[in-house]
Amino acid sequence: MKIQNKFWWALIGLSLVMFGFAVWRAINLSVAHDEAVTYLLHVPKSYTGIFTYKSTDFIPENNHPLSTALAKFFTSSFVDNILFFRLGSLLGLLFYLGGLFIIATGLKDNWQKFILFILMLFNPFVFDFMSVARGYGLGAGLLVLGLSLLLISIKNSKTVFLLAGFLLLSLAVLAHASFLYAYLAVLVAWLSIILVDVLKNKSDLKTISDRFVEKFIVPVTPSLFVVYFLAMPFINGLANNKNIYFGGADNWWSSMVMSLINAVLFNANYPAWLAQVLGVLILFIVFCPVLVVLIKREKFKNKDLLWFWFSWLTLIISVAIVITNVKFNHSLYPIERAGLFLLIEFLVYMTCLILNFSYLLKDKIKKIFLSVLSIIIISHFVYVFTPLMTYVWPYDKHTKEVMEYIKRDSGGKRINIGIDWLFEPSINYYIVRDKLNIDFVDRGGINERKFDYYVLFDNSEYTKAIKDLNLSVIKEYTDSKVIIAKPNK
View (cartoon, helix red, strand yellow):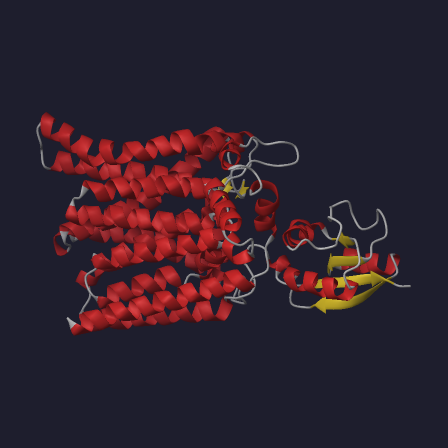
């Protein structure tokens, strides 16, 4: 018992360290492009307007209304600073951690609990979203917490956990529209589990009806109301404008799977063939264990095996729903961040896989395997993760420093800034939030008129513009290729 208690305290300590790291990032990370768009265009609306806004030529519909509403609440009720703006994602991380602890209570031993936290916390692509106000971090947290309650309900058969789990999954859809795929997949997977169970037990019609009502209709209905009345209106609007999420038209393998693999690799300097090898390995991990389970079913515990089937079905059905939607509705495949739900589902599946296949391994072999896997995962995280840059938009890494530099250099005088379009919303965020004596920037181009300062992305086009406009570079950020320039007198 003492060892168990110490281990739980170790997991709590690890969680606090990672949460503290996420808070530090939320405070110090420069605002990114899409965050700034949310702050400037959607946060100022009323709460009703955030959920019901219809697209115009200038302002697109919002695909993460719950995250936006939380950003509005925290910045208007407390302090309008970057930490409170991003507090919704940090709340998502708390949900995420809560889900991990709930799942851990259903795992067999300490090694399984340990690898769960390593798999789920040290994925750089997932963790990156826990400090930025984009809806993905909040959605991931709600998804994991919802799945954890559904998994635990398999072992304790409590309907209240099912009800709470599905409600959390419906809120994940409000956190970001792309999580609708996960919600629908879990719905179908759970229905499949119930149908197989009642058919296997050869129950009479009344028993089947009662069980269906208790385990599906009652817990699912409230979440369907949330999705239908709150989520579908804005999702339909987004779909009409083909703006639900970041997507691509290539095949499902390259658009979803390979884009997620490359995102998890985090632009690291690995051999080019590694992503392809990982893709083949993922196919093996997803399909080969099914054959083993079918052949050696007697080796597994029934309720643990239900975890495996539920997580596997959720993953497979998600892919099937995406492919079906693309084929029949001419939608796009979710790429990278839009496919985050699929990565979360895979990580939960991996946890359930390790839980079940631990029965087939000798204790020593299991410990060696999980130790090596943990070392690889943590080493990759440490190697690739950049604390003060977000993966999906690295261009704004130094925008906060750029604005502080220009503010000091201008001496408080009224100025204007010519920009590369990449920086437009993030620079305007600092102008609005800090009430700077700087004209609003736009994407009109740097050749339209003369500016007091220029913030440019250092590429061949703007290198040429510096010469043409007779500018001098006064500050350069080499790692993000951002330069500040002024006209020569």
